[in-house]
Length: 158
Image (cartoon, rainbow, N blue to C red; front, side, top):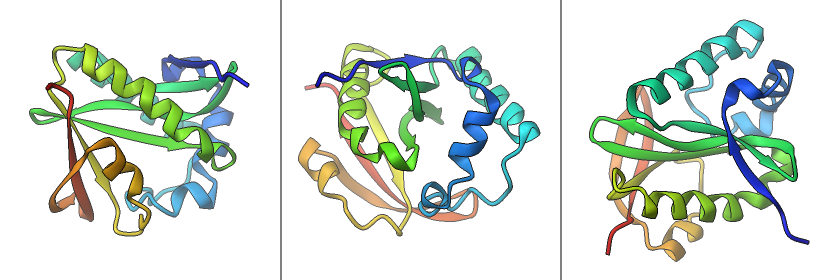
């Protein structure tokens, strides 16, 4: 069955859906920066911050719908001179990540602002086969906001 993937903005999602999503221990397991409880105030701050990136950079994280159902958020966020790609799915929709990422990378290839994308993965992520399959290369280990991450890079220009 064909999955219709739609990228929309986070303010379109009801706060209680984001609270439930981000309060799931299976989601938090691989998010070392997730050190607080999600409530309406946290969602409001999160959405305002993400919308601020859209205002600043003309691009940011999307809310992601599959067949008109919220499945998570992700996309491209400017970090210095680099566009970092992130994807945070609801635990019952982890299986659609490859399809969503494919659509997001097609967007990146078509966008002249994005010559490459980076990925920051926590050491808890052990299955990195997908990054190798798409051609991402390991850059090194970095610290970001007090947490350790493995950084990868994917060229979007030939």
